[in-house]
Length: 310
Image (cartoon, rainbow, N blue to C red):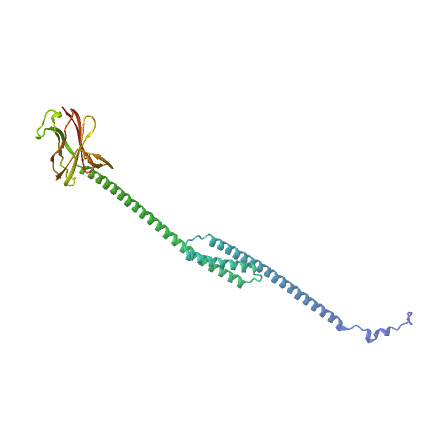
């Protein structure tokens, strides 16, 4: 039967158009390779992202460590600034370590490449600075303790000195008081002061207008504190009209910084025992009335009395 379309079926039996059995295998091989490559790519991508993520985590940790080191170093610098010491040697050492801390902080801020080794290095340097500062703190504490002890001892010494000074002052005051008492107690005293009118033959007269001389009798009292020896005793006789009786020469002696006149004077040998003394004043024209008698020795008034003469 003739083919209506005009071709021979035998044409399809040509080797060029026959199915190739190796072509399907080749396609499957390509697919397998692609699948394997895809799996490898996915694995590599996962590995890359895992490594990248770990690197990011590590970088975050490094930044945290860096920030921690900077914070620790900042506190350390503040601690250095807060250390107050008057010791020149320690103060110079603190200044040097403070400069090292400043330099380290500058390096930290400028550092761009961080790794674990550098973190360890910076931690070591900060730790060294911290150890050095602790050593200075111990020295300062020791000095402060010593200063407190010295201050306490100084206060104690001051108290002792003050007490000793107070005792010395009290002893000095007592000594001065005693010395004053001795001086006061050593002053000679005259007692039993009498005034007698005498005639030219030194006999007592009853009327003073008939007298040619006056005699002052008294007793120098015994005094163990007084200095023995020759004593100059001055007598001032004041008449009823208020004038001091004296001679034409008008002799004077010193009393309380002034020169005053006296009636008569006598030197006596005083030996700390009662000594009776008589001093004469020669003149005429005496008037009746009340006479004042004053006795002086060694610049002091040692006795006085008022005597009525008829």
